[in-house]
Image (tube, each protein chain N blue to C red):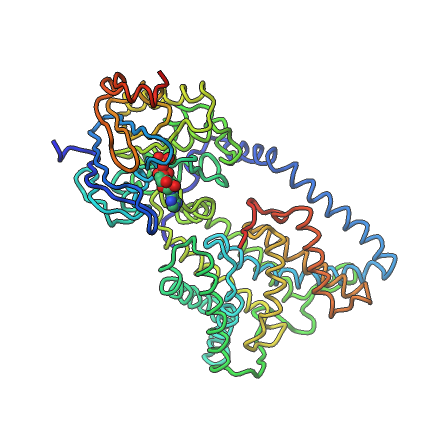
Length: 351
Length: 239
Ligand SMILES: Nc1ncnc2c1ncn2[C@@H]1O[C@H](COP(=O)(O)OP(=O)(O)O)[C@@H](O)[C@H]1O
Ligand SMILES: [Mg+2]
């Protein structure tokens, strides 16, 4: 992840402001429409929900929904990173995150590292592992051969699942939270509770978003990453070694995936299948956000989390069993209106 | 003399998969020259430029400033000093104009001069400066072509390859663009190999020319000679 920081080069005194203004003019109107539409739906729903169950219940469900949402966001970030560097959905991503979480488990519970140190070391190990997998099994293929690479990821999906099953078997294990989880570790807002652990997850996901975005914006390798994800052939023609960029994408997304797994595991139980449901929601979140937008992935995750929680809570017919279906229904509607997702910049891959 | 050549291609074969498109191409470009490649659609002009950049399979010899490029990666050819503006421009449409120029300098190590070069190309193409924070995809065709050229020149190449820069542009815009190419060649000393269907435009700035037919060089000579050549006049100058 070297490459040094080559700050945006030409910097007029008011470059930032000028850039901001232009960006606002360009995308402002379009985004405002999207937000306006969402906002209208939200307002109508809130009024109805307050009448139905009171404002405290609505607030509590909002916090719960955000909590689920941030978890999906974390995993969705990982999916977007790999999509942008390879142009594919990595089917092994969930299992890679699961494996990384098990590594953290071993480091923390069996080797006695602190939770934070264990998670960070596991992220580094995951990044290295993913870079090695990329070098050995993806690098040899033409980056445009999406079918071959997709099959590689499917194989790794199976291999990692089998390995984890052999090493750790299928008894669920409790995973420690890096945040305080005592009975009184919460803040109260309008009578609804947010646990410190939830706040910790929200902050961690937002911090991850900021760090990854800055890495892509401010470093030379980040510029190469954005260039290659915009135009692979031209990326070659300016001398970028595509393999390195793809490798960076794998490493970054594996590290973020492991982080996501470690954030999720405390509220579920850790077993080799624990990411499978989360992965579906996260995939939905990433799709909703446009697949190639990091911010979009986070917003997509929050929307999915909120829709899931609200539909399960307020519409008894739907119930929690069908909340996945309702979340997917929302996506279908949004994709019908905006085929490239809420924040997607390009036409989504026809595989 | 041979040692001083920027580009020296001999006995070049190239193609896609099982298909051989270039059967035997030989051409060279000397320092400071503008050399134009003419040829009908499908003659193999684009494939020739791709072969120089090693983005198709090749046999034969491709020397850039004396160094053999055959078998190297595209990234190495770029580092040897070749910049390629592909047919259809190849800008990074999701990136801003400024980022496009930055990424053009990807292989350079003299970071300090990169800013000065960006200013230079902004002064030559003021429209780009006005749009420096816009996505390249939002530019007009002519502006994108300017950006593609400026982006390629950001690597300070020893050889600039241009593939049909006038394609899809209005005649006045094409003329303006070629005036810029002429000036860039004279003032910055940039050596160019230009593929162009519009021979009138190309001859205005070219020193020498090759005519490609079905994967072989059929005619070559100085621009002045070829402009008087009957076959060339009929086929490419529309007289
Ligand atoms: N990607 C490709 N795969 C297979 N054949 C190609 C490809 N690109 C070009 N060709 C073939 O190579 C020949 C030469 O094409 P090209 O070099 O693009 O010609 P020109 O640029 O002179 O119009 C044509 O017959 C074309 O069909
Ligand atoms: Mg062509």
